Each structure stands twice: as structure tokens, then as C-alpha cells.
Image 1 (cartoon, rainbow, N blue to C red):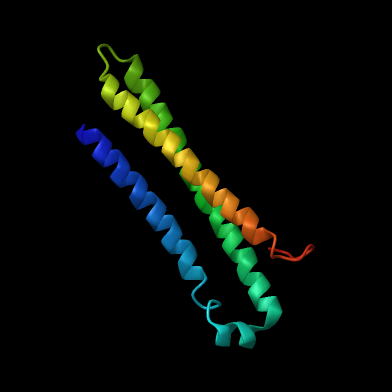
Image 2 (cartoon, one colour):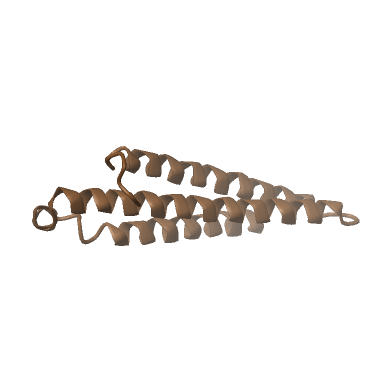
Length: 120
């Protein structure tokens, strides 16, 4: 039971950290005054940068999920494994993969705003 609270807390911390980092990069281009001062190219560059960061966060979440799955597999092979703990790690891995998919979807959404041929 206690493990599920740790699992949920860890997932929320990972997602909030990743979202916070991505939101921080959008701070300069978010206001109307900044957007008009930067011009259209600056805004498109912001989209490209944000998309790249969302993809990076998705990759980090996938790596975290891979590690949790590996931990679960190792725990399950032990003599008299704690199956609640094993299941908790597997659920955390699944949740992390779902979060990574959401970040990847956000990156694709942002990428649609970047003109073709623009170098990222």
C-alpha cells in the first residue's frame, strides 16, 4: 500500500519537473509584446526548441520506465519475491510510458508550427 503512494509521488514529481523545464523555455516568447518584438521567426524557433525539449523529456521518461521494468524483472526473479512491490514497479513503468507518450504528442503538436526546412 505505501509503495503505491511513493509510486504516484515519484511519477508526479517526474512529470512536474519535465513540464516545468519545458514551460520555462516558453517564458520569453509567451507575451504578446515579446512575440511581436521577436517576429515570426523567433516564435517559430521557440516552437522548434520547445518540441525538442518535449522529445527529450519523453526520452527521459522512457528511460525511467525501462529502468523500473528492469527492477521489477530482477525483483521477480528473487526467491520469495515481494509481488506487491514488483507489481508497483511495473505499474510505475506503465505510467511513465503513458506520460512519455503525452510528451511526444505535445512535441508533434508543436512541430506542426515549425516551417519545413527549419533547422532545429
